[in-house]
Every structure is written in C-alpha cells, then in structure tokens.
Image (cartoon, rainbow, N blue to C red; front, side, top):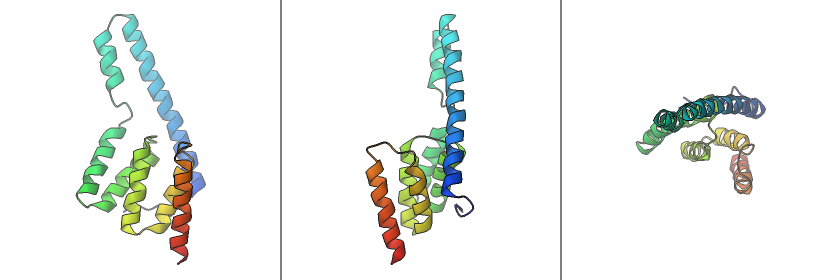
Length: 143
C-alpha cells in the first residue's frame, strides 16, 4: 500500500530534484556515447542507443496504466509514485494519473501531498490548474 505519511512535501521535492539531476547525467552520458558512435561511423548502434528507455520510466508507467484500467487502484498508485519518487520521471502523466487515482480512492491527504509536490514541477500552463486543485482538496478536507 502506498504510504506517503512518512515523507514531507519538502523532503519529497528535494529527493525528486536530486533524482532528476542524476537522470540528466545518465541521459547526457548516453548521448555522449551516441556521438562517439556516430563519429566512428556506427550509425545504427548510435540510433539504437538513443532510442532505448535508459531510465526505465515507460515500462513502469505502462504497468501502472494497466493496473488502473483493471481496477487495481492501490497497485496503480504505487507504480505511479515509484515512477515519480524513485525513478524521478519528469513525465507529467504520472503525477496527473496518480492524483486521479488517489481521488478515486478517497485519499484526500495523499492527494493533497502529491498535488503540493507536483506544483513544484509543473509547467507554467498547469500551475493554476494544480493550485486550484489544491484549494479544492483543502475545501473537501475541511467539510
């Protein structure tokens, strides 16, 4: 079962930022390797290398989506969170789906925490949407 009680919003944000820095380094290393392969005329190897999911985000997301569609919402929530927190994915779909799943599960405090974390990583366009969601969650919690 997904347990967000043991981590603060601030700790989660810092952890995710650090993980994303690590991921960027891995990604950059992969592209440096690809550039060397291209320079040595190994175009197919370079293309294959750059098409790999070096960080492994997509399989976890696909599994979470599958669990969610099958109605296994707890498992889906765990997988979306793993992709966000453990893997450091910057794909917004993970956070958006996790917020939806937590709402379906009626886990308002977890939904609020995830929204507050996500607010630190959203695009400028999504910022007001997440701010409104946070206010809506707080309103539901106060009833």
